[in-house]
Image (cartoon, helix red, strand yellow):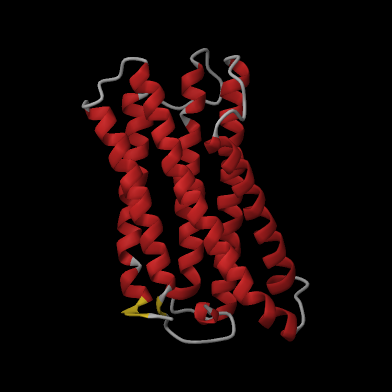
Length: 230
């Protein structure tokens, strides 16, 4: 299954959305929420690291990792390394992002893991980690047999896309949850900040959608490591 558009050309749309989403979440957390901090007497500054790292580090870099195999006109060995490194970076930043939420809660005497957003977040990062480890062992080092790689590829791709779609949906749920807390604390429901958060969530959804569209579009060439297995 493939969309009749070249992946390289289509990928410019999610790249633009990625830049827009990154700028928007930074403006929200720095301008409207007061900034970012690892240690602070204002614990909200610690929490602000969470949406920044989860969107820029996890969702955007993870999406770029997924698209790299389909959109980049490079040798498959090069694309494999790019794919692996971007996913590893996304995984690490995602873990740190989740840790900042726990850190904020623990230092603010707020219970942990009480919402669907948090439950899904733990499940998603766990599946993401399993995906990365399996991909590393089978497709990179030490590498599985040709038959094993061939049989694993469709499942690796489909599970990866499934986890990524869950991640995008959960990020949107996180924006909704945080905005609801803020509005219940007095934030103007029709103010600039509320609109910014809502539009950031919309951009996140559009970015995730165009990542999938790029995967389903026409790659520069077909090989045994392409997404043609879908």
